[in-house]
Length: 242
Image 1 (cartoon, helix red, strand yellow):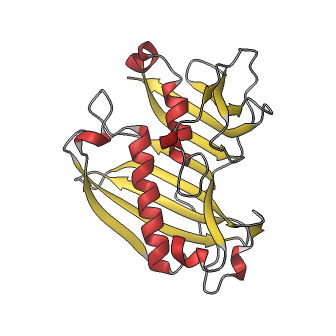
Image 2: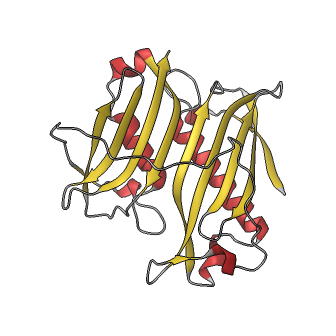
């Protein structure tokens, strides 16, 4: 069972170039994921009855074209089931001509609210078994960047904390995107990113972005915590000329 929606790019969805921003692209996928999980019987409220909650562990997104302001597009999502450990979910954006413009695959974990231990998804009734991904592979593991730069730490802000009282998943993406200067964004556009969500950020943390430039277009980034130097997320970014 798929969930499909016809959407339009609103003024508050776009970046300074008039195209769907990376963060709002993620917000739309996240909202569709919550809605579809609820339809399937594994939504936020349903999991909380069993003292569980969803966390996004890995995400791979490939962007061929971004919808422009006022442009319509279709977003589809579906569950690919579980291997017992991860729950897998794919996303597909298509334009008005039916052309694929954005593709994504994601890997989710169900954690116990109190212990934070992983709950095996094959213990949930009727959770389907593993199916093939949109890319023929799942989102992979991203290594930590090798960088000698001195990071600039800043405090966590009120709007960066989500309903689970952790640093919001989407805000990590925003922090990484915002760590690049205006001149870089003037000349480059994000074409692909793969991100691992490793540890929880909390309201009293101070965070910074660390980068490694593999080459002109391929970068590895992480959001690190000042108190222990831990990577909270790691991301592999692929840029293309604008």
